[in-house]
Length: 133
Image 1 (tube, rainbow, N blue to C red):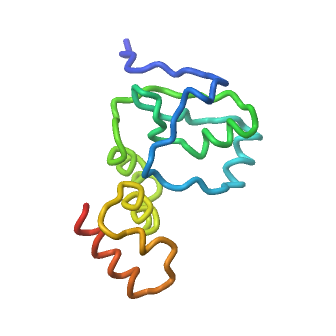
Image 2 (cartoon, one colour; image 1 turned 120 degrees about the vertical axis):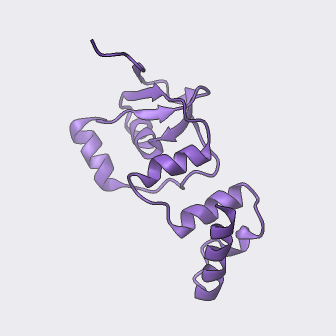
């Protein structure tokens, strides 16, 4: 017999969830929204024991915007580093994602690199990111 390792819940109570500071910025994803509107949410979001969203913040925002029931499960993952690991299996974090994380955490002088088109400053930021990993 299979072993039950977690439960999946469904809710419309969006206010119980929290976005994690330092996670990727929410971007409009019309393709994902269209898919969810047509098929529903096929993959539950992952939250920690305090209901911070570790994986699925875009699905969460689309569900909240459209009043769609939101499936979720509670995982043992706990923090932003776990989020990075989860997301790197599906879509790697880019330079801007790391910059935003470090700005939110007030690490070094990353604030000066936010949205900068200057290639030299961006290269220096990449070096800072490698040193902070």
